[in-house]
Length: 228
Image 1 (cartoon, one colour):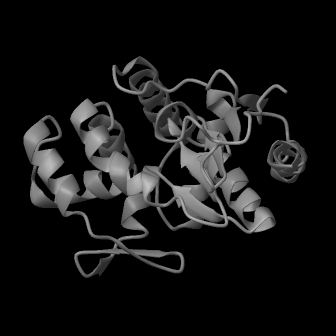
Image 2 (tube, helix red, strand yellow):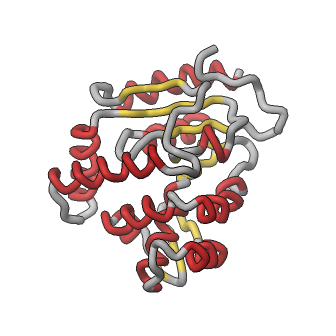
């Protein structure tokens, strides 16, 4: 079955949702996790935390060894929807554009991705996991039971991200977001380590013209077939 993988020999089922920025993967992953009663992993948070930490510490985004050391020191606390690091609630800070850009830049480094891989895989626990990211189905959880890859036009994604930022009280412009998203897509798709691409067995959904509720309904039906 397209998008489905034979049940993993491992006891904990995993559903992966990959895709570029603002494609709707976070919304879908959260909806699936709630509907299935699974844990939720937003893998991008780890790269954003490292990007934030590097900016705060004045560590250059090209200094591989220093970044790997920072990654090893990350001890985040997740309190409901809040993310705390170094005694500070950094939830809103992680959504700033400069932090997202920093996250994208450190994510191209193979050594950094390897350093954060262990933290991401620790999230796999019963009764199951929905993992949201860019390489969840290809690298982090290649044996996932069900895989999705979401996409949408750059214009649609820029409008979505602009709305998200405005709702959080953060300023930006559509033109700037178009540029930043396009640049991030290019970095993610061309990086040597774990480039952004659909897993061979992923169900691809273009969300440009589909409402989030309809995407969830479609994915949930497919997911339940995979998990049956």
